[in-house]
Amino acid sequence: MNSLSDESAPSRRGERRVPMRLLVLSLAGASLLLLVLGTLVVLALMRVWGGEVGLVHAALVLTAFFTGVMVLVAAAFGWHAGVRLTRQRLSEPLREARQQLLMQAQLQRDWQWATDATHRLVRWQAPQGAPSSSWVGAGARTQQLWERFEAAEPAAQLRERLDARQPFGELLLGAAEGDARWRLRGLPCIDSQGHFAGYIGTAQPDTGEPTAALPAPAQPDLTAEHESFSYTVSHDLRAPLRVVEGFARILKEDYGARLDRVGNDHLDRVMSAAARMNSMIDALLSLSQLSTRPLARQPVNLSQQAGYVMEELKRSAPQRELVLEIEPDLIVQGDPTLLRMVLENLLGNAWKYSAKTDCAEIRFACTEQGGRRVFVVSDNGAGFDMRFAERLFGVFQRLHSASDFQGTGVGLALVRRIIRRHGGDIWAESAVGEGARFYFTLG
Image 1 (tube, rainbow, N blue to C red):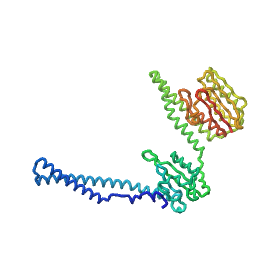
Image 2 (tube, rainbow, N blue to C red):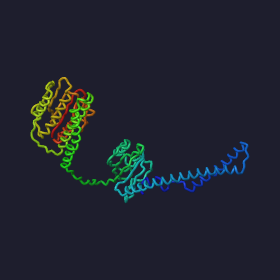
Image 3 (tube, rainbow, N blue to C red):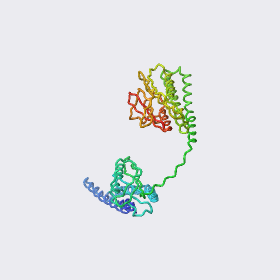
């Protein structure tokens, strides 16, 4: 059989085992030896003590000693038999499972291979019916996996993946002997102790023909999924939240006077957390609705929309000092409602994160990069560490604590989804304490 494991690894049937009769003879011989030695020791001690050794006395001593030895022999024999039976009982299902897996592997179209922890090839097994001529020739068991293939860039990539203990997809490699080419896949194995134990993988001879395309999966019913999700979020999640919020409000109104300052503070925290959760559910629903909502493209004046957003923000805190610059006549094609949500989130973040500066500066402008218009919203607020920039656009990902700046962690994820639906992209630049700049394009 074309398998290194079958050629070099010892078979289970050939393993050395101690025959049962040899074990019994060994135990009997050891018992007899102990009996003789014990008798001599007992007689010698009785002579040393000066006593006369009578036949009855000696017989009793020998009988007791022999009985003890036989008990030990019987116990050892029983222990060994129990261990052997237990081992057979446990190993038989494992042996059957291993045999079934090997048979299933042979029925597959792929070849099976495995390495040990040092990347030595310990198995290279052909599928059933594969011609011997298609086998990458038999080699020593100590052969490294990459040594079976020609020294080229793919083989170097294979060695890098193996050394890094990373899984790898399809690598096309030429055989070191002959003209055969192989498509290899592999996964690292971890043993029960958590240590790296080698690789297992599959290989396919490359015929030069394109791989048959898999049938396209059935498209899910997005409308039905969205309706189910919306019902779950709006009903199942809000129901227990309403209970928490309602009872907290009852406690506050009816028993607030009986609670001390700490108790009232705890209630305020519960009610505040419930309100935040409601806001997060609203944001999550808005995010989910974008996947099914059609775009109503029409001319949109972003400058005008930005002005409306900033007017609303300034009314919420009229005492704040603000330097506001909005470039005029920034007209694009897009969905006015969705683009308004983009500006509300970006300008709202600029307003929020610049709240702790003496004089906030917020700008909305447009530049050109690579022949495309790039819109930018900038501020001089708290900023953020660029090492965590990608987290900005994840759902419920925040770079500032809720105690410093309130928020749901969904706004920028919503912004990116809207912009990508318009065929654009968004990215950010910032430094801690130096404000932030959010750039976006529209298709």
